[in-house]
Length: 265
Image (tube, rainbow, N blue to C red):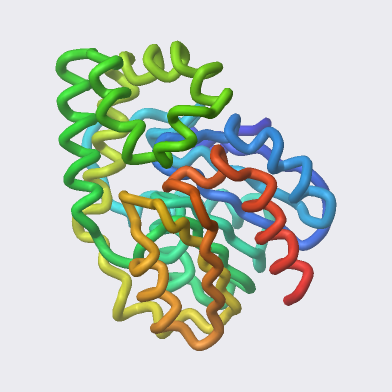
């Protein structure tokens, strides 16, 4: 559990295990705490570095809007400070966007890329999410935000039947009611407004694992297929009966896909 100072802002990160480094970038609503189970699995064979990007988790809140470039440079400077020169990178959703942009900016540093539930270009999903979080930042109505957001993140079956949802319901509503947090989430979505890495994917020559989910409303599987079609060495795996948040809905399957792929390259 450590902190790195980047342009007078704090970047929080955690490091576990030994071996070839695996850098993990969170999805929009995630933080390092969401990887408690996963880190134990992935750190068996890798040095795992989990990063709260700016405006996430325990990292600094930003005073104004910014671009993906700032996130990429903050991550790069952190990794340089840790003397981590070459590594695998895993990005989930928003973290996948940043991972793609990192890999196209520094292609010689990334030896393997894992992209989960992500796209290579700005999508309408970000407009939708920005409206939700911007409204909640003004009203503080976490319950309304929850009711609007959850069907976008999870499959219907998971929402109805999952113990995870029942267990964390109050905590999620409280989290979303925090206006400072909703403001941070709105800034994160706005940081993607100029995001388009489709033409730059050709600069990625490392092996790439792309994970999609058949019930993902926010980033449908065709967005992951579009990434694969533009890369020389990419594999697409689709998780069935699962919504956008695969790490919550099907964590064991998600980690098994990643672990087997890492062992095979």
